[in-house]
Image (cartoon, rainbow, N blue to C red; front, side, top):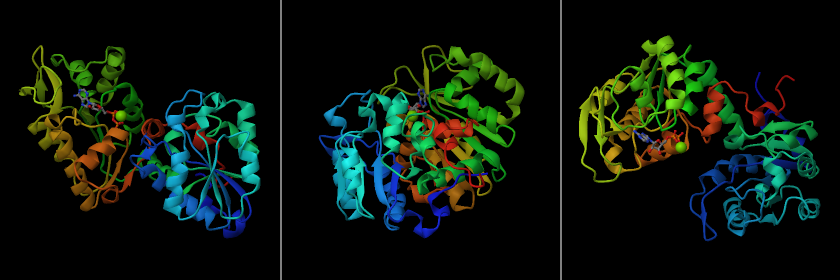
Length: 398
Ligand code: ADP
Ligand code: MG
């Protein structure tokens, strides 16, 4: 079915219209200086597309977790200045979303931009409060959501306000996320290889269950793999273990065990710190030792599935990659995935830490098919959950 995107409307549809765009400007800021503007730049195509067609743009985002209070360090004002530089035109700033905003919006000319203050300074945002949603909606004629990373949250700006609009459109970034992740979820090219790592079993169970019918193989690593290994009767020493989801993991293995590959060797330490003495274990891990990376045999085994064909989805590093000593397995898989992409496989990755791992391996986003901007949202989407922020957008043939 699909959702209507800003590209689906005639060019003239936006001229003179007040267009509310929910963006994800949740960027790291220290002492008023933006440390990484990737997320701001990611929404530029949408901003320029609409601005270039005469829309009067009202941009809104959250930043951090102010929990309904005004916290000066979490102000979006520095982002307004930065956006002025990136777009080459003055971006106005509304110091709050309800009182100051209407007056500033009423003075916007075609193509002009205002950025609202941090949505989460208002308790109504995360509570999806109807009156806050209504006051946000009263600012605009058309609703656009370009913030995929928060689409799994039913907040006032991602969910509640949408019902006040006839036109609820996906921005270009959102549309791209929906397109690629729908492909991964419903119609992956074959063979379809899923690499899952990271620490939390809970986040990944739904992904395995929902993708298993179309996936050829799951390559499991990282902290989550030890709960799976223990379910197979392996000794895991003091490695990460998730008691709470142990039964579910056992069920997954008994139903789909032949598709789920687990590490066959490990790098382990007694303490997870840089410089710790490392030991290689094949099979079982001895008491007192903590698995922190996949071993060479596992790297070789996993690489044998990463060829230049079909589709690869990857979420979750395969070891404690933040510490260089334990990053080897993750770096090797990152390079193998990039090579597979060069040779014709479609490679989609998602998750904040996985994206950092890719960058740490010296790989650029453009060298892969799609780098999802979501963490939780990406995993929920692939687990088959209908995300509230996507659900409320206008259906293409609706
Ligand atoms: P993403 O952010 O890409 O979704 P996750 O947050 O699920 O990834 O997982 C990343 C975290 O998993 C990292 O902090 C990493 O250190 C941790 N991790 C990976 N392997 C292990 C391990 N063997 N033991 C403990 N933590 C691990
Ligand atoms: Mg993470």
